[in-house]
Length: 188
Image (cartoon, one colour):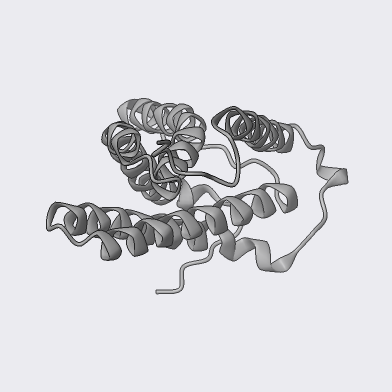
């Protein structure tokens, strides 16, 4: 008797989908770094997006921690709701991030000395791990939704701390670079 759960896509098909999504996202984000100023659309609303992104990353961090606490307490449904919330917020963040970098020029960090080295260390680790965590999150969710819970748990043990690090450092990067934006947007 076959006890494997049937899914809407095979593991091989999902692998191909993850590769396509990851390459497309990383390619788009990289391309935006080199988009000439005269090719960028202007959008007044874009000046609020860095702050919005920091809020989204903060909410992702909170959802991840609450989801972790829920699964440790045996509350599977609550865990799933928090993790889905974190995924949706991360997706909205990615759309907002791409929109911001499409509409504005790159901002250089203006700090000096040890703060500059700290900023670039945090930024570099944030960028590398953000690129790595996208396929990890997709696989972790896939294994959960396809009923492959042993694989889900194995992937989640690695994915969770990286995803949390990326969301927290996203907020730290915002606060470190915010004083150097050409425009100032502080709602408080």
